[in-house]
Image 1 (cartoon, rainbow, N blue to C red):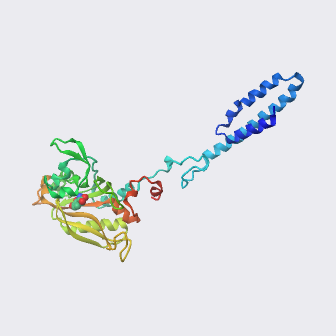
Image 2 (tube, rainbow, N blue to C red):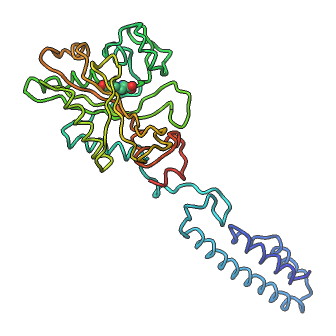
Image 3 (tube, helix red, strand yellow):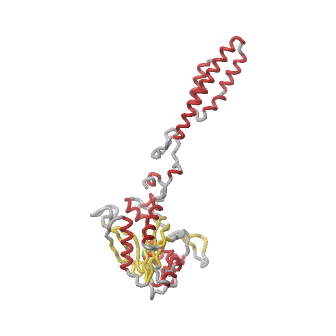
Length: 343
Ligand code: DAH
């Protein structure tokens, strides 16, 4: 029996093991112990001492290996490495290093700005009905503009026999918000609410289009509200959000639920003479808005002869992309840690 070779083999296994103490139960030890009893009496003492030495050396090595394993476990994790250098396993993001998604952070910022301007913040929903998506917004059945809002539908039908839908815009909340706060008008206060939430569209995906994205809807109603109030409110919001004075361009547009309707474009914050973000136009279309159509007020039992109001719907993803120079909207829903860790 080559005691030295056995010792070297055991030590090597200890140094490579994740649970080194198990090696004390190795068959080599059992073989050595049974060899002792099989030896003639006069040789037993010397051989026994050799076996003891092997055991002590292995025990020492086990202790050293155990403290080595412990220090690896406690070492700070290098979050930039995709794999743990010690174990070769892929790194997971520790829960204490998780962070709020950039869109959620920005929704907080957007809501905070409108809140300070006197708007309450309401939530939308992720399944809605055709009445809130279309009829309450002055898109009667068969209206061609319905085709601009192609989204996902359920197989289940509502009480009118229509499928439920994943809302394609936050305007689905207009009727609810108008009804909820209509009592404000009777005491001489405006209806002022924003709804930042998730919306869905059946889109061909590319750098500017996602099937799931966020909008912030705004509704303001009072006596004597006019287009000047609309433009000033949005301009003030955008300057607060981007932290500097910006030029805005207001172009006529068409939405069934506003009259007149406008598209609001922002002077490109990235360039002076045109760049890839603004397709060399120096302007970026950011939101739709307008004076609330009388039929929309009527659907919420508000008298359009007495009250007027404005509404707007702004894409939050685009707002955020322009703030941080993000070139592809698909990053937001990708779950890519390398992207998310930058916020
Ligand atoms: N809902 C529109 C869309 O997603 C955006 C919009 C336009 C909202 C005008 C409004 C509005 O409130 O007044 O295309």
